Image (tube, rainbow, N blue to C red; front, side, top):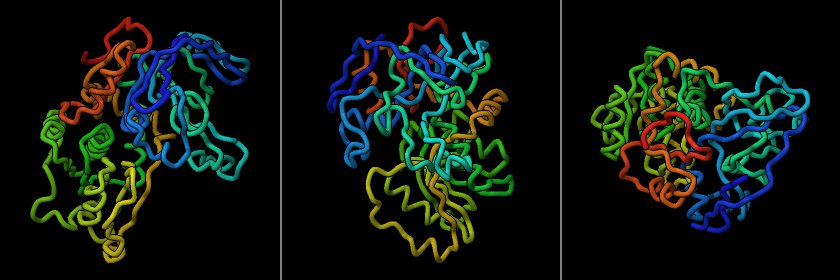
Amino acid sequence: MKAIQLTAPRTLSVTETAPPEPGPGEVLVRVGLLGLCGTDLGFFDGSSNYLRDGLKSYPFVLGHEWIGTVVGTGSGTDPELLGRRVSGHNFRVCGRCTHCRAGRIRSCPDRSEIGVLGPRPGAGAQLITAPVDTLTRIPDTLSDAAGALLEPTAAAVHAVDRLAVTATDRVAVLGAGTLGLAAAQVARAIGADTVVLDPHAPARELAAELGLRAQAGPVEGDEGAYDAVIEASGAEPAVRTAVRLVAGGGRIAQLGTPHHAVDGFDAAGLVIRDATLHGVLSGIGYWDRLVALVESGAVNLDALVDRVFPLDELDAAFARLADGTRHRPKVLVRIDPAPAEDGPA
């Protein structure tokens, strides 16, 4: 089978490797689409904090956002899964520690994440194995592109849930990328008065296309005005701005991941406002809710897709991912030849 190997900064190749075999409780999946995100770009250009901190090293098969079709089953799995479209979360945990036994698998100290953390290969291959308990079946009403976006955008549902957003809340979302636009749509679906802040005009235009209110940055009256603030960009100025926007007794979700320590973070402002700050990791446990929101039309994931690149245009795909002027945030790679529509090309 073919797999995407990243061997050094800006050095990609599609290599031939032996296909994996599903073990007990696992299925074999033929990958259709692979999503690329900022984490993948950091691995590609060498800037990733995972590389810097020794949590990942070259060479490895990248990729952690995917959709595919079950083509084989291991022992102890339901044969009815064969032929089903699936996607899944990427945490592989010990199953034995206190956190795992309590169902808090995001906090497992021995976890790995395919294509991101630890030695396991990523989803950038024609065939991958996946534990059945990590999978979500994709209904016929969802496109391949929307299915490939469930992994990142489920974290946005987690952020909104973590803040216990209600219809009476004013919500500010910082960053109109994949995470921010998903979070804003989820908050709007609850009925919250929601605004998206992003300095880039194309991002604000897409937010407006999705029916969201958007502005370049804080305006007069915004300081201390929001019950819930979701920082979805990871940009240092936005992380600092979140504290300025939150109301007294309000809540902040740090959904984006800064690549460095944030200088000038106003911890005293958090104290003075008696605000709560949540770090939000992954969307495990929120996939079914997100699928329901997409099926209902409350959340549009297809609109977030910029282009779908063929496997032999990987360099072009990463160049597009690095292009901050693109109108839509999501870049996808077609791993398996496309039999159906997957979004803009």
